[in-house]
Length: 359
Image (spheres, rainbow, N blue to C red):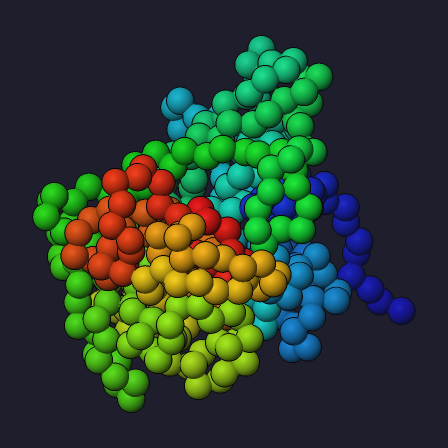
């Protein structure tokens, strides 16, 4: 009986924030998968268990959600002043391809610990006890991320008391700095941060309607719309959106037309081949709500209600990189997130996503 030859590939299954993924060192991949192309994508899809028409990832390392169907490749950095290059791939559950068009902000927090644990950082820079700083080159978006990782007895500290709504158990905290996540603009809403040159656009989505939209590229391309324009109040949980086929189709149509308006794809059909980016989110002013875990969230504890879509479904928490994009959108007057947010001089923007974490 014939069979496919068996191979062994070192890999690490890691959580970062509210996401999980399978991490590889580039050098450990088979030679044909060490370069971009069909061989790499086919191998990594098989690792995750995609495409899976049953939507379960039973035969693979994926978790059958956008938050848990991810792959990461780490290598010594090719960029001066950086320690490692970090390449991220989002694996569709039912698709036979990998979307390399963006970053995962949550998994970014696992890159530093992975690099330290795998001996990719100069031992002289790893303290016996204290914080180790890892400079990461995010290869998908060509940006710098700085991770501050707790080290105890010369090893990455994994346990701790840092709690994150959307994650069941506490763990050690990893602080990240996203350096210059947006490209240079003209200072008045134009340029690459706002690809259309406008803080707010009229987005005409045939068969769906006309929507006000803020389209920003800061860490990740995002399309923000008002919750009220969709008939929502911003406190919706996953079931209200993900079990509504019409709602999912409407939000995907908005995302696809936003992708065209932002110049990311040539036409709406091409957006289906790029499901990771842009992301679409709807926002609303602060309001009391009950989180997905049953925890009450008070309006006074948050600055903005935000619901982000990821790979065609409402995210159970908030995409990390989506939060990065939301912050400058709130900071700039007249954008939709800024108009919905509570006026505040505070440095931090506290978001209220389904999981309830003020972030």
